[in-house]
Length: 557
Image 1 (cartoon, rainbow, N blue to C red):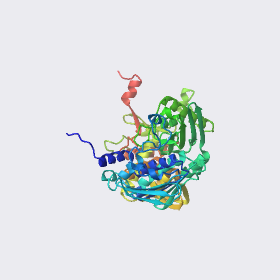
Image 2: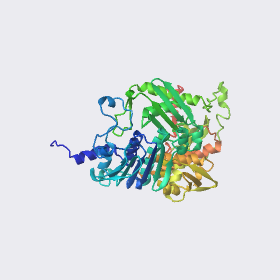
Image 3: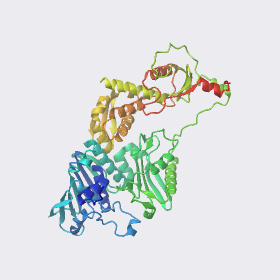
Image 4: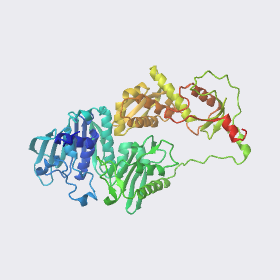
């Protein structure tokens, strides 16, 4: 195979593919440039999921008229000039790839006026080539308009998702930088509708409330910690205000938004024992670290960083969040009351008297044998006897499986049970969740949700699937949208919705069940197609065979 040098056109598109993954990538690069230019106001407009139009306007320092064309050349940057600068980067952007990469896969117009100049400049670029330049009156700052993104780049275009999905990613990016820079006024318009507007007053709590709602903002805990050279600051939610995934955890390093499993793990460790499995806090955490101690040049989109001393960063972040949690009264899990004498294990609350049972139904070979409930352990696990030994059943996981199968069967028949609400429930959504709600409105309606727009980002829930009756409808709906946030493909949405509904409709761990309730739960579990696992894949049962019991008690020869 011959070795050849790639053409400039092909190499520029390969480079663009690394920097510009989707419309949200364009927003990220342009917003970072605006922040580096000292902007205090940044307006973003998106149309058609950011594919037809993206416009980012700022009131920053602008680009000098003599340098506008130069800004479209690869590796042209005002952020660094020497190797020494690269070793201690303090700006968000620095590679000089944003504008040329965007221009390689879209039509781009830059209109700008630099400080000290009287007339602005406008340059129009198509397929990486300048088409037009003109002078134009405008206020100080820069406006970058991107049209027809990826239209001439089908390899990338075919992997884009629906407009609502792409809009949710755009909203997520702008949300992160609004939290990182509360002193900057951000606005986001999606298809002519205002989606986000922050005051720019420098109050992080105020921005948090604008994005996640007043309850989170009012109850969020201040996070503070300093152990030279590391300083930690931000806000984090008390344990009872949690989410079902990590999307509401914003980790910032020197106010740069980064994705860091290590930082997420440090936050999770601080909450250990305070949150149920699968629950995560709402957190906005910024780590201030000397630039020389952080390598931001390890990822094409600058989304990841490396620390010179990861252990120190991990420990300081964990301690700062733990300290915030300890300063506030928190309902920590109480230890289970273990019996002090052997005969207490025979109390009615621990072991219930067995009652006569009907004959076992005929079950498929993949099902469970007929089980007879004996009692509960810690109000969470059902103890049952089967023909071949002892069974321990996780009541929440078992009920999840039952409800999931019931929901999917009702959905296949087009007859999902619906419960109307006497009083509509108000739901305040983040900009990202608004887009998710719009994207999945038809699917949610199939499951029995009736949701009306109430103004701005407020919605009224008027009906829900019947299995949510008596539950926290707002929390269940919020968790459902959160679970949909990670789905890039429309395939499997129904399954994801059903899993979330089953989880929130199922009995909880720690909930006491009566004899009849346990019998009905076990009988229903036996009839499901996959009784041994919940919809998330966790086991519902643990089996100890008679042979295992005999071995443990030394009854085998």
